[in-house]
Length: 158
Image (cartoon, rainbow, N blue to C red; front, side, top):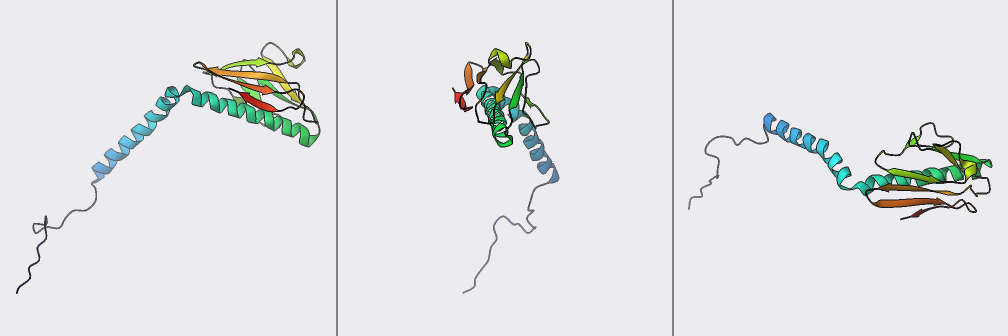
């Protein structure tokens, strides 16, 4: 009995493996285009993401200022500039920006107002604060960050 070996699809010539340079470039161009288009579409489709991010950053800045007041045993002030839409944390060189799409409203005691556009939230070495609240809103979604004057506790009200 004689055995025969057949190979399918290989009609006498070597099979080409891999992709051509043009195919690879086309795929890379398509991937680059999708990466360039996707972020703006996602951020505009989900307005709450930018708002939630700004709220968490603000809460972190308030907590950092409180922690600094306690650790250094000296009063510390977080500055909120409504006109420039910036929050300045003591000891930090760069200000925190609040996106232009986010509506910002600050409620603090009159003693914490510097001028029409600027106010502070003060924290003291015992952990207490001047108190206040900061409201952030966008597209019908509202978050309120409260700072308790007695304990200095920073909390989020959705």
